[in-house]
Every structure is written in C-alpha cells, then in structure tokens.
Amino acid sequence: MLKNIVCDKVIGTLLNVKVKTKDGVKAQQDLADIGIHSRLHPQSIGRCTYLPPTCHTFSRKEKKIFCQSVRSVKVPQGYSSNISSLVSMQDLKLVGLKSHDCHVLMQHLLPVVIRVILPPFVRGILTRLCMFFNAICKKVINPRVLDDLENEAIRLLCQLEMYVPPSFSDIMVHLIVHLVRKIQLCVPIFLRWMYPVERYIKILKGYVK
Image (cartoon, rainbow, N blue to C red; front, top):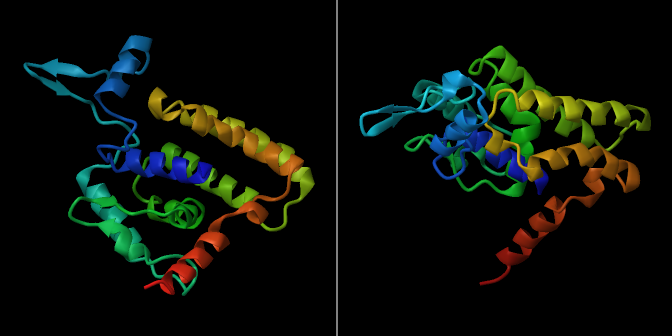
C-alpha cells in the first residue's frame, strides 16, 4: 500500500498530473512562505501567475520520452499486467495503475525510463529509492544489512526533501523509514503481499457471468 502511494506521488509529480502532482501554485507558494528556494517562488505577471520550472518536473518532450519508454516495455507473461495499455499518449500520463503495476514500476521500470531524462542528482535519488524498495522486498534478506537499509532510507528522505516541494514529504512518505523495522519485528514483506490474493480474485471473477 505504501509503495503504491509513493509511486503515485513520484509519477504524478514527474509528469505534472493535475490531480496527483505535489508541485503547483500552492506548493511553490509554500516555498515563498518558508523562505527557501527563492528561484522557484511564483511570480505574478498581470493576472497570470508564472511558475518557474523545477529540476524534477518533465518538459513536454521528456514526458513523451517517458511515456514512449513505458509503452514499449515488453515483459514475460505473468510478470505484470499489460503496461503499454496503461499509457495515455494523448494526455502524456499513466492511467489505471493497480497495486502490482506500481510495484513493478517502482522496483524495475522507473530507474530504466528516467536514466536519460532527469538531472543526475535527482535521477540518482529516485534510482536509489527504487533500489531500496527492491532490497526490502527480496525473498532472502541478510539481517546484518537491515540497519544499513534503515540508514539509507533516512538519507534518501532527507536528500529527496532538498529537491521536491514540502507537500510531497507528508506522513505517508516518512513511513518508509519504518519499513525496515517492520521486517525486523515481523516477517519479510513478500510473505505479507496481497498480490497473489488479488490475482486469484481476478480468476474467480472470471467465472462470474
């Protein structure tokens, strides 16, 4: 569930999806109220408000590259849903993402499709975030590396806050820090996934006319 929320925030902010983006007039006005990132403060030009471009938001050309890259992905049967059907080239956004689609995007596809789009420092943070999710979702985890993973999660959130608006880093995003402690107290994450149950429910729904 947490990974889905983080995926929606990341994809929505990168593609500047109107409903899901965490970067807009209010977000950049918060920067002016706090007194940070003066370059990104909204500027009033007559009756219009100009929002300076950020380092993490795609241009229209970069949106096309991102959507075309995701649309061209081909995966083995059973690996995920038909990713290409989730891409809207007309609106340049991803639509109808399910929980397992977010899982595949955050762990495998996102680092690949952003490798030539974003600036190196932003791309590096997002890639490390995907690698963190990949590490904690493995079927075999060495208990000795859990403390290092927890420290990595803290560093990632601190570095991410340097570039994304304050509205991005809400309480749900900060719950990433507690994922490693949950593994230590409970069992590995893959044993608590709902993906197999959801997939079987889809099979059962296929029997209903």
